[in-house]
Length: 298
Length: 331
Image 1 (spheres, rainbow over the protein chains, first blue to last red):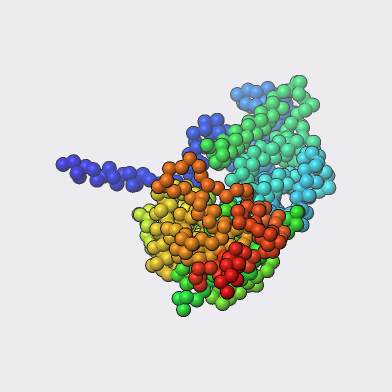
Image 2 (cartoon, rainbow over the protein chains, first blue to last red):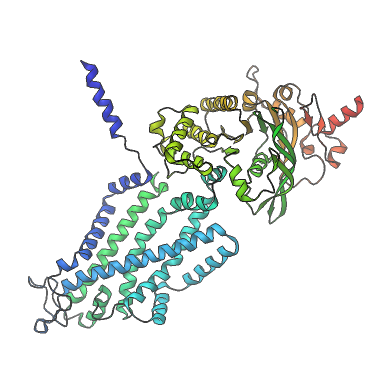
């Protein structure tokens, strides 16, 4: 009787054995990290808010009710109203969309440009490497916000140009990161092994070097989104980013700075939103680094 | 036909150009491998054995390295002057190579199956399903079990011995005529070493692939090889068939190496070692590179560089003036 009972058990074991890929392993250890998970939930929450902003906003972001100026938080206006009687909650919600979008796009832009330049520098070496690396060095010699301000000053102040400026400013960080990673991966034995089976340099680059160099970029990218959001807010605060009637957290801070004492809610809520998003991205980024860096695992 | 050399290295000189000037890692090496032969190449670390065969594969990092002089013939084709594109079609297809570290020789991000099919599809225009079948066949041939599950695993799920088998399968998948094994068993423990060596000997017999076994382990050589080349300081100092080399070593360096192997039958507190260290490549400008460590060295050894002189039989050659003398005395 015991024999037929054994068979299903064996089958179960075989079925349970999912192939464990490096990505799946990473996700598994990320899930275990509660703080990182909290960060991911915050980020995910803000992403949802940004996507469904139109449905979540109780009022239009530019609806002015001049009689209701500077209303403190109440059941009608949860976050109060600002100097034009606009609902702060609605503006914070819509601001999430703009801040996140600018943060994401700027970082994706700098990741793509930085990675291409970094890979070219590491792969071709010699004078190409020297040229690209020195340009990165020059860019890194400036404080990033100052460089961003200079770029916006040239391009003209608006949100799109602020985005471009932040993307450019972050290029050398990613470029240097991927350059150093490619340089170390290039020396790995499996790259020599791939050359020994007769693969072309380009195929090795695409199939072996880049996939193995990409993890630090994902981690750095997540952390950089947080920085990018702060930088966009800073540019907007200085009047170089979002222009009225567009709304953005930095712009809200700028608009409310005159009323800090009388109507602190106009400043506290957008400030809190920035802080929470940055915190979320940072916690998530740290968690990703722990999960993906095999050195930290052991 | 069987006796003809499939791979022939003539006067190969490979140098690395560093800040301190030219460092010849391989200097005037002559070697040949016959079809289906198992050649052992022995020597200490840094004697140029790996560089010699990386030169054959065209895998010398350039710069700083460069083949300065000499020819490498594979089935009559000169490899050193071949354009990269043509060289690529030979690499992996006709001459394959496996490396010392099975733990790092496979790409950690891809499944075993993908890496094997990639190897074959680099050289042959076949569809994925056929390539996969061939991959499974190959894994079976190198003695791995449950091949249909194995091709869906990642390298980190396999043990060192299994990975080295996968590496051998990957190298052999295109049925190369020459397999260069650069210390294939150094990173493995002894029992696995024996299995891998047996596997390679089997493949050599079954598929008639010539295998060049680069090693510093004379035990490995005695176990599997037909013929041996001993290298020292970028030069071949002695070549012979295995029996002759172990029974009648001629070069003082070979003698020293053989004396350094502890004898299991004799209890001894003292292990023999050759006095001194391997000279830094390029540091010895004149004379025999082994002369400073050699018990038999005389004046001429420090002044002139010895040629390869004939030894016991046709296959036996020694780079040592002691045997040049013997020759002239007998004449």
